[in-house]
Amino acid sequence: MDAKISEKDTNIVELRKILDESKNIVFFGGAGVSTESGIPDFRSATGIFSMKLNRDVSPEEMVSRTFYVKHPDEFFAFYRDKLIYPDAKPNACHYALAELEKEGKLKAVITQNIDGLHQAAGSKKVYELHGSVLRNYCEKCHTSYDLSKILESEGVPTCDKCGGRVRPDVVLYEEGLDSDVINGAVRAIETADTLIIGGTTLIVYPAAGLVRYFRGKKLVLINKTATQADSSADIVIRDSIGEVFRQAMSINK
Image 1 (cartoon, rainbow, N blue to C red):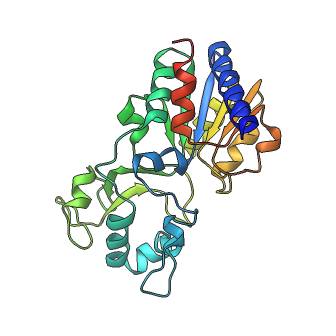
Image 2: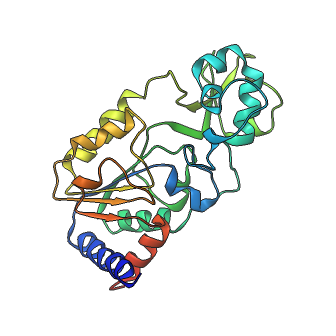
Image 3: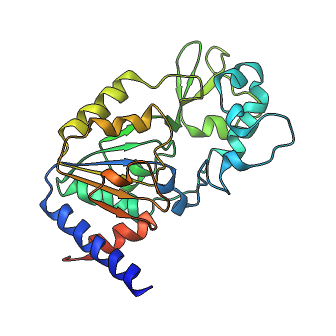
C-alpha cells in the first residue's frame, strides 16, 4: 500500500518537473477527462455502450450514420437522452490545461470528446476530433444552430429557414474525421516536446493512431486502466486525471 502511494507521489512530482521544463506540451484526451464532470464514458462497465436498450440494436449502432439516416426520430431521442449534458461543468483537468496554455507551455488540446468543456474552461487551441454537440447545422442550407435548437425541438429538428433537417456537428460511426482537424492535430503532436495522454484507452481509431506521430522527449500517460501505450510512456499514472492535475499544479505554486 505504502509503496503504491509512494510511487504515485513520485510520479506526480516527476510530472510537475516535466511541466516546468517543457516548452511545447500537447494534451490528447478521451472520455475519462469528462467523467469527473458527470458525463459517462462509452466503453467501461457503466458506460453508454454497455447499456441495455429496449430494442435489438446496440448504443453504438444508434450513433452510426446508417441509423441516423434510417431512424432519425429514434436517433435524436437517444442523442438527447444520452449524449447531451448541458449542465456539465469543467473539472480540475480542464482548468489545469487552460492554465498551462495561458502560461505558454501547452500549445494544443486534442480531444475525442464532444462536450465543449475544454473551451468552457478557457482553452483556446482545441482540436475536436469527433466534433461538438454545441454546433449544429442544416443539411440543406447549412445554417448554423447552437445546442438550444436540438434541446428545444421535438423529434427531428428542422431548419427555420428552409425546413431541412438539422443535425449535430459530431462524427457518427461510419463517417470520416474532418481532414483539417486531423492535419492540425498531427502537426501539433509532431512538434511537441511533451505529449500527455489522458482519460483514454487508445482503442478508438483513427484518433488513437495519432500518437504515433509523436517524436518528442517525454510521453506521459494518465488513465485509470492500462493502455497499449503504457510500455512506451516515461510516466504512467493510473488515477483520476483531475486529481493528478490538481496535485501536480499545486506543487511549487
